[in-house]
Image (tube, rainbow, N blue to C red; front, side, top):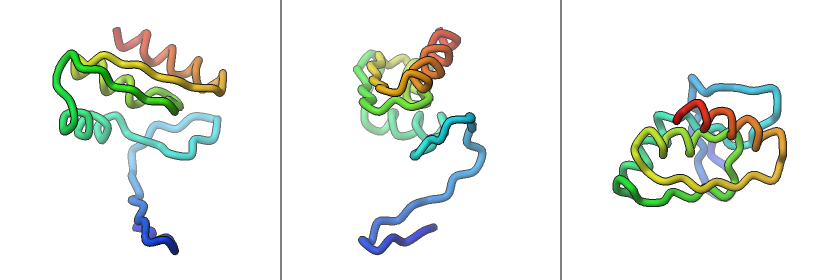
Amino acid sequence: FFQAEDGIRDVAVTGVQTCALPISTKKPVQLMKQLIKLVSLENQNILDPFMGSGSTGVASLSLDRNFIGYEKIHEYFEISKKRLENKN
């Protein structure tokens, strides 16, 4: 664990898929699945306005949720697009 000056704690997570581009918040699909199950039901919408490499989208689709994602960095968008297309 890392304790920041403002009191916010950050948890180190192992087993995260990496890519050549820097990602500021790496989120394992398994973690996102657990969070999505807590806050939504099947066929509900999941919105990720900072999609990155698409882990939230992969988790959403695997749990029968609808997914809407935004990403302004083209390289990340292409990574997400490929991951989501392979999920269907």
